[in-house]
Image (cartoon, rainbow, N blue to C red; front, top):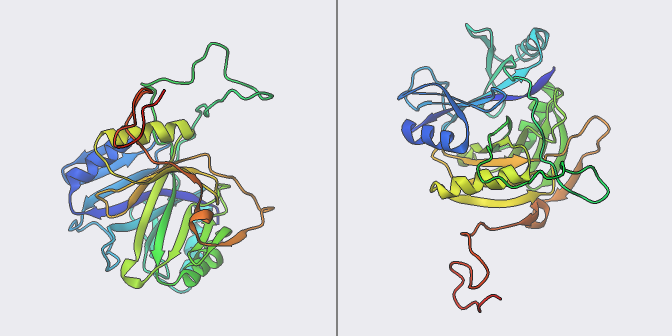
Length: 318
């Protein structure tokens, strides 16, 4: 089952205008968007889709406060799509939609879609650094550009709150061919499908039933500088930082999370680990030390000669 990863997440929201502006300010490109909602794309065509929560075209909700209505996975080809349909039709309804995609429901009640992927190949440079003993940036090429674009490149992963993480994991591993790359004991597994080497495209977190839903989603950026630059611009537009910037341990990805009007957190991430079948999953207890290698806090700009903003009582800097 050659599932590549999430092609799109579909939300039914309270405030279409606020969510649309949020996704545009985050860096996604609006496509066929009107006052009823629409599609907001990363550089490779993966996307967030929003509609008003009462839109009759939306899949049913989860019966909780979550606004996530559907997770659409991209697969490599029509053969992979047929294999998924054959497997899941053994014990559940799998609808074939007019566009040829599939729709079903997982064991936790999350609506899933499957389609031949819409992802467009990317040919973009990665962030380059000057490091002794390694290939460097070109001579006379400066690294800092205040006006540099920082656009989300591809939909990275989604995180679910689930009431039974073991049962949820079994569905994705046994029925859809996902593999566990790492596990936070007391929280849940990081999972990746067979068609990617990203550390994870799905993370499951055990919670009480009333919390079931989407905790966060994120798009890959071009490197840590883009995470920091995009995040700073987002803060300057008035959006509230929730966690970060920092760097995770499991997955190694740089991160910065924000509150959102979509009923979940939204993250920027970059430089995630890549794993193949030779990787052995780790398992460590959930803790602050396990969750991040280091964590920073965004502050307003300042210059030496006085204390940073809000640092009352700090002596003069020299």
